[in-house]
Length: 326
Ligand SMILES: [Zn+2]
Image (cartoon, rainbow, N blue to C red):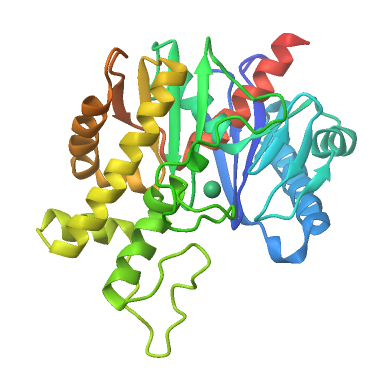
């Protein structure tokens, strides 16, 4: 095996509950994967230490297998200043201005890139997945929240403050359900997977359905369902599920129509838990989006292709891009 054949980058996608880690060849082939708990409840400092220890272990694993780690890519949620390599803020991990790129580069001795998880996932979908060869792509991840990445010419726009793509906080229903950000009527308070589940449960049990309502707060414990179950019940014709699902689809269409007015993309790639609803989501969403567009071109609306590996692949692409730039 020549040295070139053995080159890999070390990629880490750090989430609120778990880290997905991989060794990835420059052509995108994944040669090794690992998963570790993030342990966010231990505080940011302990999480940083775990990230560095796990990355160190991956470097060892690569070398033991005769591979040559050339760079490290780490992606995290929240607000990320990619240029300075700083995890500026993260609600679920507790990062506050953590210079993670330099900490990793100093400890591990590899050129390191730090990026944002959804933007990295969007980059991977645009370059290797469902948005391949499309040029202008909007990747929208719909899970606990809703976030997006606008990818043009194979790069995801970061924004001036590392906060571009907060599609979930487009105001779509003034006075609507309260969002985790504190405002009422944000898109993700109605159409995220969590919101769909929460809203169905609230209507079924007569509670508020706001983002600050604990789903299991009632004494008797209301029925807790997932968004996928709501989608399934809607498809089976259940009245309440149909109503909640339709409201979510219409709110999503409002958000995507706004996004299309701003970005004029060729393809919108939907990922995250809700996108797994398949035709039950895509068919009515395409119709609702079409109804809202006037002179704007209708984008192709497609499911993500890379599943939950997208963030890790994106981390690898950031690491490789940085090698090319240097
Ligand atoms: Zn919000």
